[in-house]
Image (cartoon, rainbow, N blue to C red; front, top):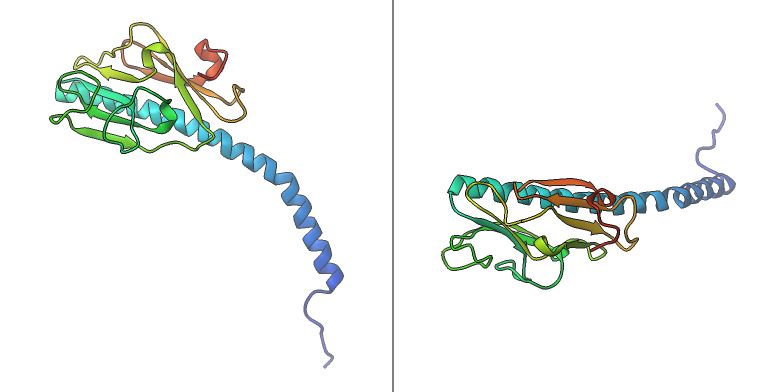
Length: 181
């Protein structure tokens, strides 16, 4: 019975490591782009879901609910900044777009990735209130646009918000906007 060598030679190991390096060099940029695109799409979908929840709660509770940009503690609304700082949905008994003692916070969404910007046109820049009928505080069709450090690109997403309280996710360029908000 002869001896059989098992294992790799140094040359074989160097070749495998070089091949892995080349493969990773090709795959990494695509992976980073895919992750960035998914962050944008997820942010838009999460806000659309929060809008649906706000509308449903307003109808079910028969009192207004508000979706607004959250403060750092996640317990009230803020007027400055953009939607990337996160948002809250709350029952807004007096309809003042501010969390009062009798209001109940229904949803708190944490801040988005630091590279994300998420702005809105004037009618949805700070908050959206849903009435017990399901209608929103929006008077016209308003837009929200999600971008990242790459700017307004094909993968940027937008939401159109109507008086009916519906938020439709689409390509940002389909919202009528031409830049990040």
